Length: 95
Image 1 (tube, rainbow, N blue to C red):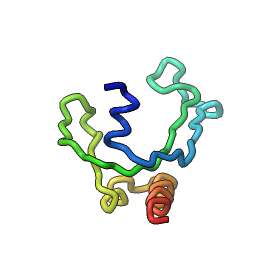
Image 2 (image 1 turned 135 degrees about the vertical axis):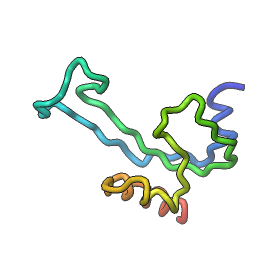
Image 3 (image 1 turned 180 degrees about the vertical axis):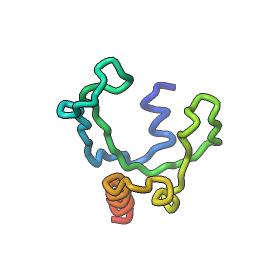
Image 4 (image 1 turned 90 degrees about the vertical axis):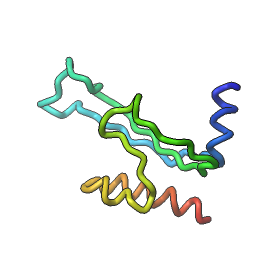
């Protein structure tokens, strides 16, 4: 099964919400030899999840977790913009 077909099986009605450009161009503490790029992008999508499979962390970082929509505000403390993006995604589902 191709990746596109597999994605359509679990994700429905995928729509791009937008993106953020994260730039360190004016950051005097930026380390060009560090693990982050000088300019990076975060893309945001909304989709209906048709099926949720068991989530096992064996290949994930220690801090990456599955969070239900109602619990996100407790996990993203201090990240108001990300909470706004999530709220927009939920509103688009309700339309």
